[in-house]
Image 1 (tube, rainbow, N blue to C red):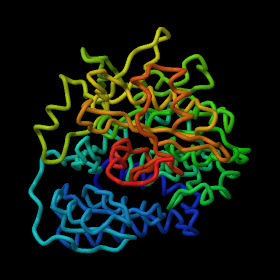
Image 2: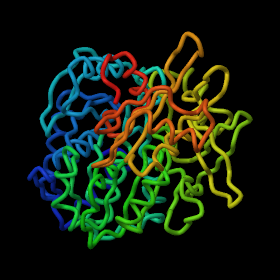
Image 3: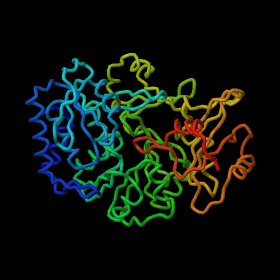
Image 4: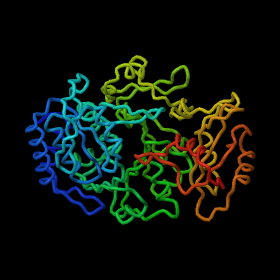
Length: 459
C-alpha cells in the first residue's frame, strides 16, 4: 500500500458500519469497497505499473468510484479524475497531457495508452492530478500530494467537526477538490455518505430531510431555493464554496438553515483557505471571513490576494515555468482582488483577469453581480466584459428572473441608474432560466461573453 490517503481511507473502511450510497440507488458496503480496491490494485500491479504513474479514474459519484480511487492509491499510482460523461476529445486531451496507459471505470481496468509515461519527480507522494482551466481555458494539471491533503483533512476536521452520526449529502462531483475532501472527511469520521450522481433540486429533494451536512456551490443553492425553501429538520452544516457567495443568497441560505459555512480556496492552495459563518458575523456578510488553520495571506501591491499554506499543490504537471510564475516567494497568486475590512475580514472585489475596462474606466463585475442580485425580481446575475470597437469593452449581464417576476431590460436599466453610476449599468441584458455554469456546477463568467456571439432575443 502506498500513500497517506490510502492508509487513512483503508483504516476508516475497516471500522466503518455505514454503506456508501448514491441517490441513484447504488450501494456498496465497506467490505465491498475494500475488495474492489484490492482488485484494482492487483490488476494494475499485474500490468507492471510504475511507481507514481498517473492512472485515469472515471467518476460518476458512484460508490464504486471510491473503491477505484483507493485501489489506484494502494498500487502506488496517481489518480487523474475524469467524469464519466466527458467527451471523447476531452479524454484524448487528458491522455496526451498525462501520458497515462490505464483507466479505471467502476473497478474495471482499461488500456488508453501504449507507451510508459516519463518518470516525473513532481509526482512523488502525489495522490491526484486535478485538471482546472485558466483564463484561456487551457487545462492545468494541479498535482496534489498525499501528505498535504491528509494534513488539510485534519485541519478541516478541527474546523467543521463532522460526526459519526452525520448524514453527508454530496451533490458535488468527485472530480472537484471540494467534493473530494468532503467525501474523504465523511468517510474518515464514520459518517453516512450519500452521493448525488447528477444535481437537480428534484434529485436531492427526497434526501434533504435525512441530511445533517449538505455541501454545494452557490449555483446549486440558488436552484434549490428558487421557489421555496425545502424542509431540512436535521441540517446542522450547510457548506458552500467554489464561487462567490452573494450577500442576497447568503441571507436566503440562512433562512433555509442558519448553519451556513462559506469556504474560499483554490485547488492549487488545497481548498478552504478562508472560512466565513454569516450567522455569526451578520455585519460582514459578503466577505470570505478569516484565514483557516495554517494559512497566511497578504494583499499584493496590485490588490491581489496571495496565500501561503502548507497544504498547497506540489506544482503544475509538466509546467515548471507556470508553477514558478504562480508564486511570489512562498505566496500563491490567486488572481483575486481583495481588501481587508475594518473588522479584519477579507472581502473579494473580483478577479484581476475579469476586470472590465469600459472606455478606460475600470469596473469590477462582482460589484455589478451583487447589485443586480439585490433587485427583488432577480434570483441571480452574472456579468462580464465583451469586446467593443468604440469603448474597448462593454458590460453584458445574464439575469435569472424570480418566478412570476415581470422584468425587462428597460425597467432593469432604470433601476440600476437610480443606484449606481451610468458607466456601470450593463449595456446588454440576457434573461435566462439559469446562470451559465461549468462542469463542476460553478457559475461561468466566460460563458457570458460567449452569448454575445449568439443571435437571440435578449428580453
